[in-house]
Length: 285
Image (cartoon, rainbow, N blue to C red):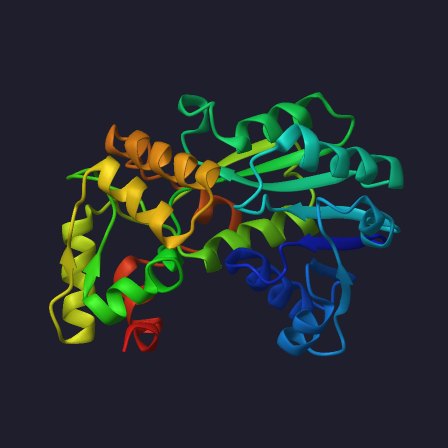
């Protein structure tokens, strides 16, 4: 492939893994995020780094010029898809981008209120080809979003009741993304990406307890308690609303299915939760 691959959200959980894999493979790569300096600190001078902000159209040209394929991640703080994300995709298409690999959400057909749905709709109408990575909840949310509560309070604070979640490791999402970016045959495909098992949060807490050698408690707050707690932490209202809505949908089984798409695309079995806990245990100590 002669064209360049653009990775948006290069400093995020999934984006960083994709950059590392493309870098190792010697791909023609451009890593985009808010800070060029941080990208260079993270990946070294060998990776082309560019500042990119969906809200700043002046950053579009440098990001999209010469790009053939791109990995698209919606920043969590952006809920205005029509005003911020779609203009960037229009610019990408005009610049010659032919294929978009979009990090979407498992069960999205049942949660049309989330921003991901509007992005999928746009891409399906676009002349560009696409691949949708409809991922279940990231295992790595526990060592990022929930890191402080686990490390400092030994608890997991999510309003999911006894619902099961087919947690997926972001390393597996990245492996599928790289396949879709570098290999033919993934155009206009929708992949439901999950780990090898569905766990409730009591089971997840038990595995973390065993791994860390101390009791991790699943608090199981009400949706209202969860929502208010995030507003108090400074989470923007639209983001808190989307997060709470997703957890309520998950309570109804949105993320409990287990699929074989990771292995079908990559040839490798997905990483189990217990291995993830061992690999990241330093995060909570």
